[in-house]
Amino acid sequence: MKFSTKIKEYRAKKNLTQEDLANAAGVRRETIVFLEQGKYVPSLRLARDIARVLGAKIEDLFFFGN
Image (cartoon, rainbow, N blue to C red; front, side):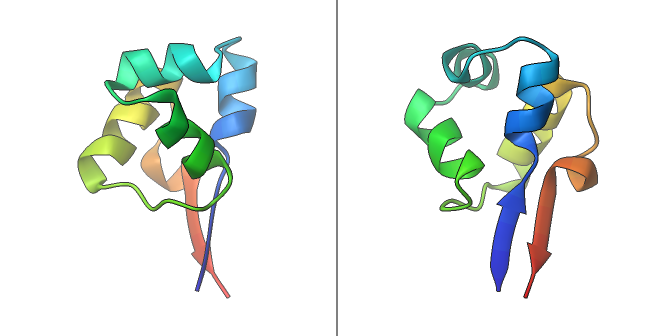
């Protein structure tokens, strides 16, 4: 199963760096890097926190597919 996100696109719209998003969500920048690359599947809490920072719905940011 493939995991992908639109975090990078939403982050760019808000003019946030990976570091900015990481600080606002309470994680390390590397976590944001891995999320954007689809190498890390976040907990529901982290997904919610990122969505709140980006002003998006969880389902608009995270996708599972084949």
